[in-house]
Image (cartoon, rainbow, N blue to C red; front, side, top):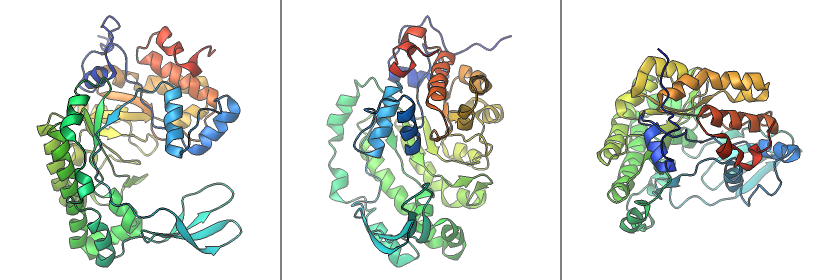
Length: 395
């Protein structure tokens, strides 16, 4: 017997908020949610030469990414303005310590020292010193993670809650990072050693973040109904996580459970974190902690939505999982990649999109074709697809 799709074209048109809620709870929808995962800046520069209108750009890099997504008809979301990051932020700008023909060694206000390329192909900076190397450095950060800072209490949550009650777009809230931020602050190799050399300090950092997040969420969730919560980690690579699952389970999971429990008490049960690479060893820990949605599902390292759904069934929710490098190839390859995940989409609980930012080797017309065919797979009718400006008249 053929699997029945959650898409039912006979349904009355849903609002984006209703559609998101239903899709992520395996319920019938009129068509699929259209989300993407942005683009690298070099991709936009290439696409401007290949047909993307040059006016589709804004003052800042982030606004430019928003502008391109809007041009491709990506569904909008609204975010509750919690403040869970370092505040006040460290001053922007840097001091140049040393200069060569193609690079500079720069010192930033947070204490970071790194070598960055000034010409040629951009690469990840070479880090010489990270902001936190011990307790003295941590104290500078801890002071900026204080839940009592007055600026963290200036949102009129009651008024915002009344306003968002009538919102037709999905409403989300950020719940921070519990090891990814530490990796950024301490450094990849350094944090891997610190969990052994000074585990008490690592625990203190994770606990400090958790208390701040709880404080902000408690204020927001009393008044604002959110549809999803999202975090950020990026602690996995091609060979799995940079911290052992056992240590992650001991250090992070009990604290993460406090946050997900709070979210669920207030009706939010779609909870994901952004973690690249091979996440498979952490998935059962996250599910146990109440974090039930995996994103962005990088296929090449092994985070395949098809296999994850086969292993965990409907207890897992999914976002992403379309191998972006297939978009560099032929139209047949693009269709095959969409076909690969089609049954998972039809089951529900899955929003298909690229498994990371679109790289610069994806041609503009390939991306246009991919978006059109993805929307068709998700039940969009021809009229709604052609109403998206870059998809009109696409042969």
